[in-house]
Image (cartoon, rainbow, N blue to C red):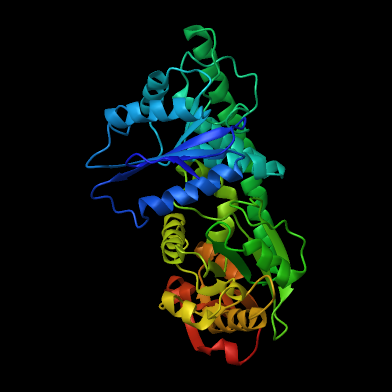
Amino acid sequence: MTLGDKRGTRVYDVAPVEETALLVGVEIKGSRSIWRLEDSLAELTRLAETAGLEVVGVLEQRLDRPSPATLIGSGKVEELIALQADTQARVIVFDEELSPAQQREIERAIGDQQVKVLDRTALILDIFAQHAHTRDGALQVELAQYEYRLPRLTRAWTHLARQAGGAAGRGGAGGVGLRGPGETQLEVDRREISRRIAHLKQELEAIRTHRAQYRRRRSRESIPIVALVGYTNAGKSTLLNALSGANVYAADQLFATLDPTTRRIALPGGREVLVTDTVGFIQKLPTTLVAAFRATLEEITEADLLLHLVDITHANAEQQVITVMEVLSDLGATEQPIVTALNKIDRLPDAEAACTQLDGLPNTVPISALTGQGVSELLARVEEVLTEELMAVEAVLPYARGDLLALFHRRGVITREDHRADGTHVAGKLPSRLLPRFESYLATRGENAGRTGRN
């Protein structure tokens, strides 16, 4: 129940708990965001709940331009101070990323060292820290946290006795509330964090190299790779379980799983593929996370096909689709064919009508990953698209173009390979999107290879 309702302010009647939070959302005039302020704050509420916070109030402001000092206007800062005093919230979470200077100014205005000021990035980093269970996942999250907190170090920080990870009140990514000695210790902390970042990058580079070797071994088997992509909580892990009988953790929460899982499954025609579940996307995905999760996200860029899962029941399904496509573009994953699974149709009274709302998406198949409805049709569509993508190719590759031969091995199917005086004569099948790279060396190119066999 609402206690009070000032303009742009909502306060909820809830019993005080240890980790209560206020959310602050800002809409900038002229912003290109496809998300309404209310929808973005609703998502931030779910993020806060996933992190273990109880939301007790929301503050909203629409501005012509953000304040360089505090993001929100000075009047809203005063309103925020009063709202925090009324609710006794211990955490304040901004829906936009705060600059280090803005975070410090807001903390100074609040004036209570026990109140932690975080932004959306810090909150997402904390959720990732809670949900990363493998060594490489934990390393990637730790790197992102340290890179986030390094420019935010002030003399209000103590020596870094706590590991990165943990939410507000638990040594969280915002670092607020850690009060300590002074400038000398600050420099020590900076050096320590910088050394730790360098060490983490070395470890992750080793993991990246190992993953690349593993992908090369998989490619030698000529097994196509299908990457599951989609907005967080679209149902990717549930679908992977349905396809493969895997026991991947799946829950109705944001970022329930972070660590990639790969399973081998058989398509209806008997052809085998490797399906990889990847981390879910979200609007305003922190750049530090994208960089830190490079080794994981390379599974997407190296895939032969992207299986885009969409929660068709979500009120912001269209915005989520656009966000996913923007992230894929940022990753450079724009060449692969896409099959779109419109998920959770079991929750809809009229699934056909709902699916028409997202016309224009490639190769759409309505499914329910939970009940299995439409999954067999989805696999048939995946097989059809993969088959259409393979073209029969014969080429003579100069020995100086060993990179193209390696690419053929990695992404195609080689049926014949002879080393002669004029180069390597190779025959087989390649995804059609790779043909331009071999154009200068093609001897012949057959018709669509999919109708002559499946490999």
